[in-house]
View 1 (cartoon, rainbow, N blue to C red):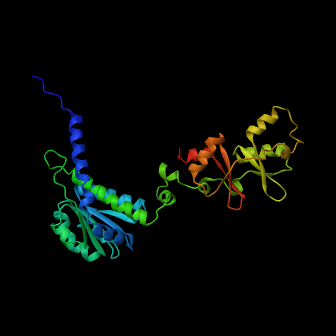
View 2 (tube, one colour; view 1 turned 135 degrees about the vertical axis):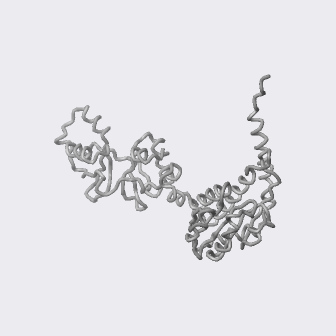
View 3 (cartoon, rainbow, N blue to C red; view 1 turned 180 degrees about the horizontal axis):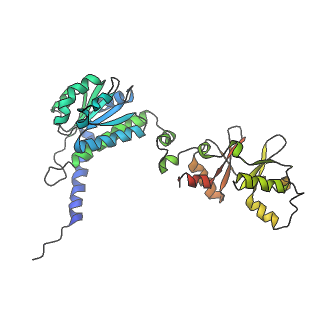
Length: 325
């Protein structure tokens, strides 16, 4: 007799339902005053906010620490097992220690708790039992009541891990908002990520200074060709006798004029340049520049400062090289 094939998705739906049901009750379980006080303590911390755990709780603690770090709160993760073998030395008197243990009785943590308490400013615990040793001995404690795990054996940490995670996220985001943490701040902490890079400013990627191709309006076409080729940016900026940028001349313009068989020795760039060119402020975000380039079907933007002075050039090529899009 053939064994019936397992219905994986049916099992998955039960897991979704159990976890969502349990997690939806968390806001009603959390003491508002305690939560606010804990957030204030972390917000005003003069040292690091150190997350500690072991096993599944350790994995969640590491993730929460990463979220805090990326959103403006100086933080690192400390494995409880490693802490008892010398890593406690990383704790300082101005630090806040946040310990995750759903049982609140994790042996490796209880064993080093007194030593931790003597080294840091305050200890915060996130547990599943207000009567646990950890909850009672911590300076502050938040406790979540999970009646059962999503695991049908009620053994594997599932709902409890998810609960710890969203509680940590709630703390991190509450502190983020209190700091008025901006997209620009996020970008500074994520220079290697696509999302963070999209919040970089134009001035962070623009070409400026000696690398900019600039010629006088009285320059002949031959010398303009040399400047475009020498700087290798596909265009040159044109300035008047007051050093103000009054136009641009691109290699596309060059191809069009050469097809008309103009005399490159005598014709001046002033009569060939494009006087009306697209520009962007240096403090705009890169994503604004991308939108403008796409809208106007162009690949370069002249960059200006607050005084409407040209200070650089931004090319789609540089945006692509930075792997922003």
